[in-house]
Image (cartoon, rainbow, N blue to C red; front, side):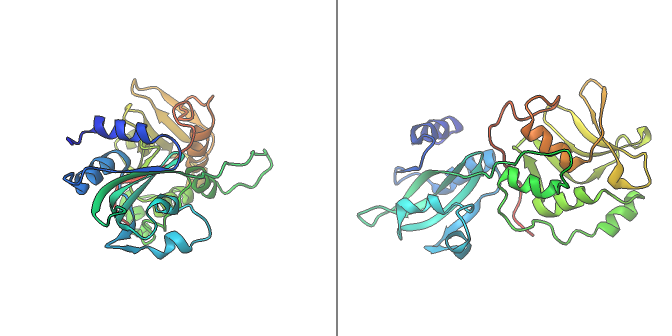
Length: 269
């Protein structure tokens, strides 16, 4: 079997949206499959390594860590890596077939993503926690030890608290594999009173307008690829929640994805 992204597309389409798996040809390099999927979905979670299952996968309070991928293999999984993608878990690696031979495998399983509850104008909302629920994020904090004092000293300003929590929680990566979260703000538009906290492949840049002594009151400004500045009167965690879930938002991502995830670009520190 020649492995290409098109081949992977065909294999995943054949498995369908439910819980399913297949054994791949024995001469296929399982690492090649892992690399192809990592290039698409980001850094995987290791569920099984050398026959030993991560205890947090099966002993946790729910199945938000990919346990459903392991069910078809019972005790035969050797090494399984997994990705959360929308409403699916996708896994690959090796497992022993019923005859005991170790073979490459590809598996999919349904992924339950908690639906965000309705928002009342009077609600006191923790938007970072809501973002965790919307994305189904179940990993430990990726960058809990960021030296924000050093970053803020270098930038010459304190930074919004929700932004710092987002970086600490999610780390380096992109919401829906599309909206890249900067690990510290970029200063390309500092002369315009803007700091950049994220961007997209469509060349929109997501900024704050630094016009208040309290950074938690900085509004979001989207500078589009054609140079237009579009302001929003709320902070970034709320902004990201809204573009993920509101199909009528000018910069919505809800038109393209029914469920949402965060693509991690690197292992936890």
